[in-house]
Length: 223
Image (cartoon, rainbow, N blue to C red):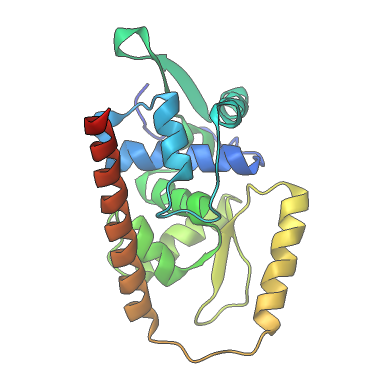
């Protein structure tokens, strides 16, 4: 089935940490490496455990990934498909499941892969999947996702306001609220301009991703 929008209302429900990571990986890879999509189990694990564009760092094994994929398939967020050579592959159904278009999918993917972020961080990171021209464009997408109940603000309006997806189970949501409250009460430290920091983060993520890609190619050549 093509990754297109539908007229259905969102059917999204809270997901485990591993399932959120795997769903984010499936959408990300469909956008950034379409030639290698749908993904094999090995590709799902590699994408879930990669060091760049991920927070927190995870170390999923075959069983973890399969359980996460089963969870996604059970709620209708992913599907199993037959790949070339009869190998099993996996694809997301996020557009229908979340009832979003490409901009919303890009923003939700970054929130799933990296957790709560500011508008500037979201714009910098999600733009690798969908071009978000400025912060107003990001705010428009965020407002649409908030209206759908998929995103919520974690901090008060203003510079540096943080947003999160709403797919955390209750126990994780409570932990997240406590963490944000603790960070908000900590003394503020001098920072470089938000734009400069966002650009630096994006460059570091890009370099790290390229290094991981080269390491993977070298490992394949050696084997």
